[in-house]
Length: 316
Image 1 (cartoon, rainbow, N blue to C red):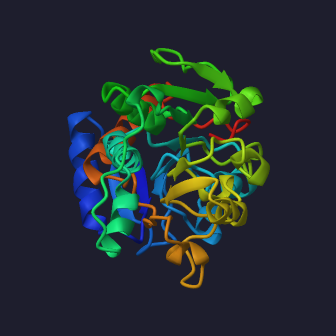
Image 2 (cartoon, rainbow, N blue to C red):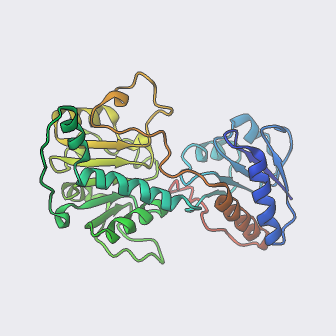
C-alpha cells in the first residue's frame, strides 16, 4: 500500500522514518512518499495537514485520510466536497494531552497567583503583597472535554482546584471517569456563572462557531479569566476585547484565533491583559503520531474501524 504525507511544515524524512519503523513493528508493508514533492502520485492512505483542494481532488483511490491534529474543521468540509465517503481520522492525544495540560495549568496558576498584577506592580516599583482567593472557590470550568480537555481537567483536579465541565451532551465519553460535575450546552449560562476560569477546548462546528459572544461571556463572574486553546472562531474576539476593557474579565490567555496567523495589526497583540501564543498549546509530535497512524492503517487492513474516526454529522 502507499501512504502519502502532506505536511509542508515538517521535514519529510522524520515522518518517513517514524512511519516505516511503526509499520515494521505491526508487520505492514507501506511505501511512504512525500506528496508535497510528488503531488501527482496516487495513494491508498494520506496523512495531511491543511492539504490543498486540487491535490485532494486528484487522489482517486483514497481509503482513508489521517489528519495531523485533533481539530478537523479545516479539512472535513474539503473532504465532504471533494472525496465524499472517504473516512477521516483525527489524532487522539499522541503526546498532545500532556502538552495541553501543561499549558492550561500554567495559565491557571498565573491567574490564581495574580502574576499579571505583580508584573504591573513591578513596572511601578511597588512592593505590595496581594491576597490570594480561596483555592476551593477558584472553580475551573472546561468548555469541551475531549482528549485534550480531559488531560487538562485531570491535571487541575490533581492540583486541588475544583473542576466542572460543559459538553455537547452533558455526559462523559464511554470509558471516561470524570469525577466532577458535567452539564450540557443547554445549561451553559449556569455553567459560565460559576467558572472563575473558563478553559475553551471545544471543536469548531456549526453549533459552536461564535458561541462565546458578549452575552455569553458576560455570564462569567466579574474578574474571571479565560483560556482559549481549542478553536479561535468559537469566541467573538471584538466582544472579548470589550469585556476586558470594561474590566469584567481579568485576563484572556489565547493560543488560537479566528484568523491565523494573527495579523500584526490585530489589537489582541498589544492588549495588556492578553497573553498570546501562536497555536502551540499542543503541538503534533512525529513519533507518537506516526505510531497512532500506523495502528489506524492496521485496523483498516483488518476490516476494523480505528479510534479517532470522525463523526461527519457531529463534525469531530
